[in-house]
Length: 399
Image (cartoon, rainbow, N blue to C red; front, side, top):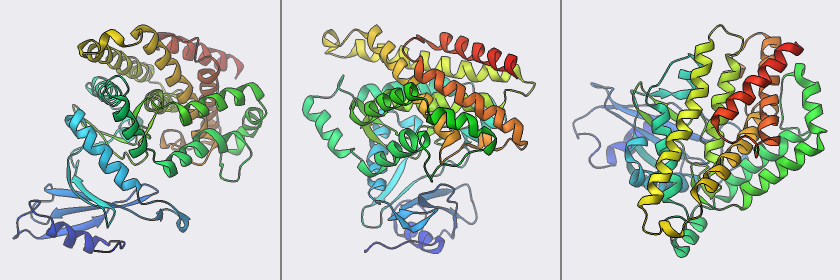
């Protein structure tokens, strides 16, 4: 079957053709539920029991939100499928199940997480997830350790690097996270009320040197298979369950990148609630970072000690300290680009009053710069919290 773009009706007929998903007697309905920029996503469900459903995701040869004027490799669905396959081997309870993959039509059929919702939406609504920190820490520790040079042979590591090069998607990250936001680029968009802060950043030579160093690390430090886009919109949750989705940006790169993106998006939600009368909820967000890092560190140490080559591993204290520093640098770049660049976050965008939104955005930019410039001096999450609280006090005094 040659490649073609599916409709909701096509998705229903396609799912019917996949053995074992639904009974032959079932009456199915399909609906498009795409909400991202890149792909078509359909939900196919039984009419008599809509909770019995699957998701069909198809990659287009262009950016869905823009159209054919922005070509984009559909090979990203292959990368996502192969990454999800590995994730299901390493931490099956933390990712959706895959039911079917079609190379020619650039699609896959997977579990519908109908009882879950997007973590970002929950954090905006100030919901609490008791299991989230442990589960995200577990996901990060298992994936980063199990696909790294700690466990792979040189040959195995080289195969991963080639299979998950994902050059086109990495170029998008390189441009939109580390390059465009820090120059006067036509793709940028930002609140006019923060023009001075943006201009100051464009002219900050020392900051831009550090960002270039972090970008170089993103491009060259091949440590493990990453999700590649691990923000709070790529995590689905219930009160007690966590699933990581949308791994089309997966690549073999620096471990701190996934960790940093998660930290950054939690901190941006923290900034969005800053002027609200919910100090306890803000502290819960900082504790989410602390507990997820503590779980990652605990499991990483445990996995390394259980490995047969443990005696040849580098000093784990030094390695984890360096990993934390790397994570802060990536977090800082992610935070700043979400204010100054093309793609913003709903946590901040939902703030209706322009001045209040500008205050939150400026605080995010201040945090981002601090994490970039001082990343090698902040030793652990507790010191991170102290740095953020100190920054808050300084800003409150200056307003």
